[in-house]
Amino acid sequence: MSKSVLVYSEELARFQAYDGYPWFFERSDAALRLMRRHGLVDRPDVTVVTPTPAPIDALRTFHAPEYLDALTKANDGYAEEEWLAIGLGTTECPVYKGCLDYHRLLVGSALRGVEALADPEVGAVFAPSGGLHHAGADFASGFCYLNDPVIAIQRLLAQGRRVFYLDIDAHHGDQVQAAFYGEGRVLKVSLHESPETLFPFRTGFVTETGAGAGAGYNVNLPFAAGTGDEVYLWGFRQVVPPLFAAFKPDVVVAVIGVDVLANDPMTNLALTTQGYCEAVRWMHATGVPALVLGGGGYLRDSIARGYTLAWAILNDVPLSDDSELLYGGAFRGDGLYSLLDRPIFLSEESQKTAWTAARAAVDAIKANQFTSLGIA
Image (cartoon, rainbow, N blue to C red; front, side, top):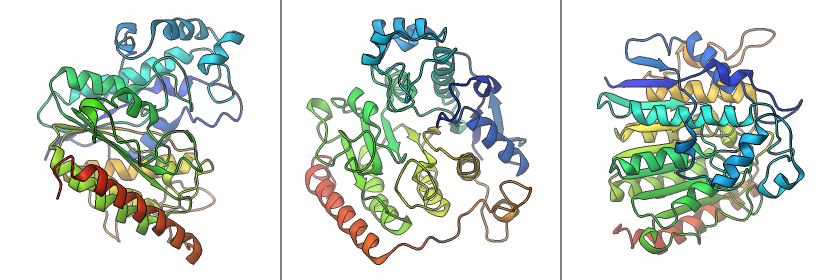
């Protein structure tokens, strides 16, 4: 049995922005409590490691010096008006005390994960608070100030590894795409809600296929709002396994945001935890070492349940119908909540729309990118 590593720091929960800020700083804590409740942490094959903040030199491998200078000043919690031009000081990316410290710790978590994967016995590393795929080289965006997936992938490339980047967050992994758009050593596959209805709006279309040495190595599979498990998993199976097999990666970097779930208040997809688990289960079944980053999710319950289920899969804990892990309840109190969702009713009209969009996107990917990657 391969080992797994959970990257966790209690420091992450101590930060705060403003009341009602959608990004939940205690996400790792909520997940860890539920993981422990179900015996998924105190195991001989699990190691919990504490990250250290990424050094500024590591941040400079992707982020512009002027932007890092602004973030350094913003770390005191005082904003300057001109920073609005680089996304700092908005309600989306507010300036708060320790904003750089928090994100340096997230990047440090991802880099600690890369270090852990150097051990050939480690099959999976999970950093639940990471996956900030919207941070640009010189701007903050979408609750993301520093881009930990990009910096981790850069470190893996420097080690000579071929990287399969899989992003199942509801939002398009726009700045990971931008960073490696011309890179053929990284096959970037993002499954997300259509940019016609969800942030970042301007990117994530199926026509964005890469350039130069990276031509064909950027794959976007957008889904219509209201897409549920059946259509999502059909699209996933049509596209992801053939691409993976053709690319033959050395390592996977994955962003597994739980904002794909139907109850998420900021997105419009309609997946259940069952559908979410199927995508994570496929990734783990490949047997390729993986650095898994949490990504988005804007309900405490969904974060705790989704990441606990993902961690169970990454540790080969079977999820049978009679397992307490499924029906033991996410939180005990006034109500009892299963880790798995009940089936969701989707209207005939929404399913028709979802199927139409998914089939068109899959057809375009097969026509335009499968051939260039040698997939029949």
